[in-house]
Image (cartoon, rainbow, N blue to C red):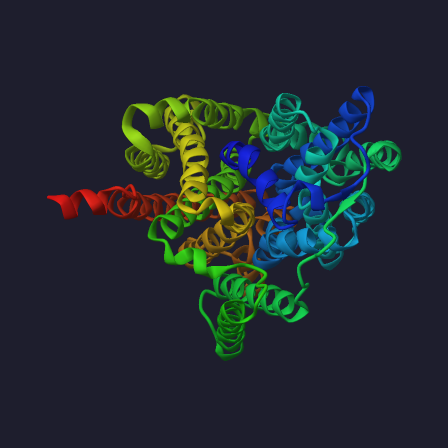
Length: 535
């Protein structure tokens, strides 16, 4: 699912990571390791990126069983899923700057240790708060890992052809991890329980840490960029405030004064963050790049598409299990055509761009994704998987093209001397899109579930409130009700959740259609203006 991200990073992140160091000679690094050792370096960093990709999607299938055990509220459940990608997005650039300063080997090894400890903490979490904190730590560990691995590969592979092969292997690792995440999560959850989806990380991290400490070469920037703590605080707290307000508004089917104040406060902090980036000499993110219309439009395409895709993966797994009564493994298998089509879309994206150009290939792929989401809303039925297959394939294929070409358009819109900043924004856009997609569409689903829940005769007021809280709460209540009433509660909850999924699919379709219009209108080639002048 990160195929587009990967393909664009092969030629750009590496370049950007080194550009800040004023040339290759300025990079303080050990001599390139011998052949066997540098391929071990690649194995270590690719293995870590595989785990980062797995953790983006592995929890999706485990959510129903997790919900029955920890009983999180709807907003808490969204935080469990969201906080990983939101923390990763918020800390990517910061960790990259710190890696330049303290050494990328040290940063990556610290990321391995953080990721392993957080995985163990998540596996044995006994409360919702503990799991949310552990998932946030997982996101921080992933940011520490992802921020420096390309620069490490650049040091380990000085030969251009070997480096190109190494980067290709590295970039595919995240995509493979995200693709197999739901299947692995379903298999592990069904056999050992939801905690095992995190526990499987620990032995792998132990091996990566032991081998990485021996083979990864150190490198750092002799003139590192300034680490602006105020910018980090403003961005993290502002984003957290806005997302919290959105999720609480969905859980309460509206916003009270406190929720509104938190949301407005978060927005103000983000505004101050943007203003600060425009004023300081070495900004955390250079917003001057967004003055280029093609760059800002491509960024919106990446955020909108990746956010919709990750949200679709997440809510599809819940819909199949809760409405269709799929066991976890079957739900994971049901998503494989979507993931496979996504990989195919990424592979064939260059062909589409050569045939129709980036602008129209992007517009067509976004439109295909939008129509697929609309089809899921209109004809989707968990009882007839065959009817789900065509829109799933179309959604995955369209999303794969958009992720690849959107990232390519984003990088192409930036001037070569600013590719480092553009690459940082590109990485952040993917992770931010993942977090915001689940947050926004999850708020819609929660609100629709609570407002459209049919009345069930014979329930007391507290029982009705429990059913309205979440599908998992309704399931817990069923165990204490007479069979006939329990059946009525299940039917009502399934009906409400089905309507919520329909609303989510339609909202995603509308957002993607709007993004397609923007792509068609604004992603004009740079040569368009001179030609118009000549006419």
